[in-house]
Image (cartoon, rainbow, N blue to C red):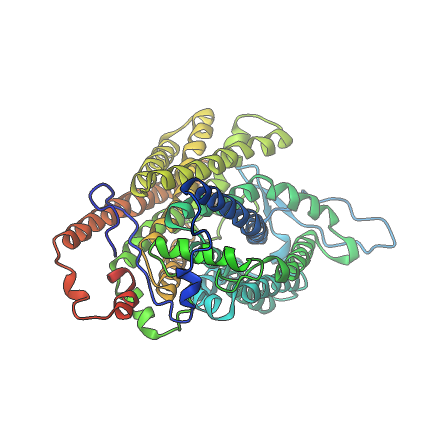
Length: 540
């Protein structure tokens, strides 16, 4: 871990150059802007970054939006039962809806149609997160070896097909198989795109881009329910229930987006076809100046995997990410109440509708009132990403939102008032969303080496998701409408994991930088050549 500005920034990005052995030296050392004034250089650099933003970010956001919608719609509620359609369409088995105290339609049609017990239904939902979490570390290695323009579109098509096939499932075993492979396919997107973007931008540019990318999750939360409700009106069409049409249509849409992605997703900077030679040299040069080798063609070696597993930053990163994304996940408003694991990220998706219902609004108004917390979270996520980049610091931008989250869940835990609880959901959302992107950026900034960074991000994000599987039944129907147990556990995750992990990570970074300033780490590179020193990555 290099000590960049250690005196002023305890969480300074700890990146150093890894081996760019296969990148031609002139690609990095030749300066296409030699002889230009500093003002001209800055103008060209701004235009280059703006072009990269428009070329890379919008489509990647669309991919994550599709992923989050697909994942959410695995638990999406249908509309209340509707009359059987007129002949000649066959009358479908109605989707039986049970009105819970929260005012949410508890979906039972899928379990009934597939003759599943509650335990089997829960297993179908849980198995997704197991394969999803376990495959994330390997996925980033494959992304680097197979090229983004091939790998990302391929997994998009694969998970779109899995979603589509879920709509044709006729048994518990068929749904289980589809869910397992869906987790494998989707595992590559979130850690992969964050890793991919970190290979294009300098450390002080990556936070904002990661925040914009992740904010697609907040956007999906604001209108995903409306989309699924509209699709579920097709209940009975073609003899298929509404839940099947949600899977089929969104799966087909994902396949189409995946096919288009073969032309819309680009490779790493050294191979990106849309870059002119001069722009490629500029991108590689600016990464080199930033002391990172993300654009290189480093050959995979198991030493990079073991280096990631030996690094304490991997485990403090797991602690922080577990706190914000690995806390117990209550069922979404579209799911049965015994079910789903994921993170604090989704925690308010259950109790927000029940709080709004207590305020006395109609169904339409309640749907609209569920949007503002997501919008506020999206806005703060982007503001935090921008501010952290400008300040060249990450710790304080984890701590401040985390405090909001802790206060929000503490209020939810104690509140008996619906208006107060609704206000607390804003604090909960504001405390969760910004910390996801900021934590990923912080971990990436402090990990160098092309493959090592990919493994570390995969392990950290995978652990956050896997941790939720162990606590998947915290939000229970019998605890409605206040969910004291669920709120209490999520509060503990935020306080101990996110807040505590952030303090620990920052303190250890400060200590490491102090040791480096004192020369206590010079022994790591003593007697090594330039290439060998660079190969040490963030240990140089």
